[in-house]
Image 1 (cartoon, rainbow, N blue to C red):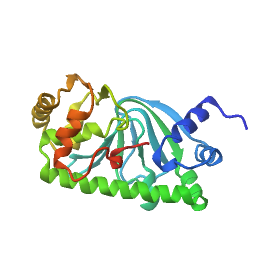
Image 2: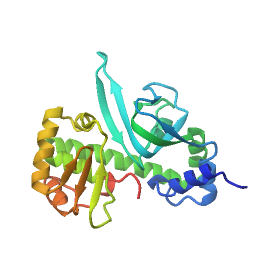
Image 3: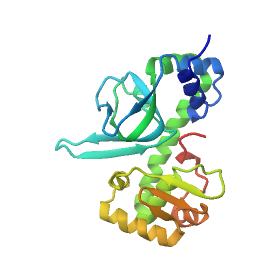
Length: 246
């Protein structure tokens, strides 16, 4: 069966997502059936907390904010995700209800896949089922580590750890990281006030030599950032639990 260019691009992307590692081409084709690659503008709401879950999503490019709202309307940022990050998939274990809301915070390209495809494949694909369990375990370890970081890392180290999550940890040489234009999102994600984030980022710059140009951060290499940020962490670098795709 001839695939459309969109389908080919989606399947190529899925091959690089951790939970789909080990899936053969036929399995990826089944997962990608009726999947879509769409461009979304800033402010687009993908779904709301409590909605019936129909699709899972993968960020091809751009940034997406996951959040919940308190009773008084305050937003609690659960995460902000960029290229390679998957979200919405765990709703199949939560009565098919989205456990958070998702909003596009920078112009983005996002792949959406019917959740029924994932459910059907898990039922017959033991490798995928094990990958899902492994991904959920990694997410739990990441949450445990964030609790640890709140206890022992200073604000600058927590920012450094967040930046390390966004890079290919196996590559050497110069690194360029593009943050969301609105840095208050990152501050909220890390549990900081914007002014605290700005001061901590300046301290991180002085300690590691990173170059901040608006929403772009440049590093000659990761060594100084790793030495500074990972000094107050129980895990060694590279930290695979922080990687979205391998």
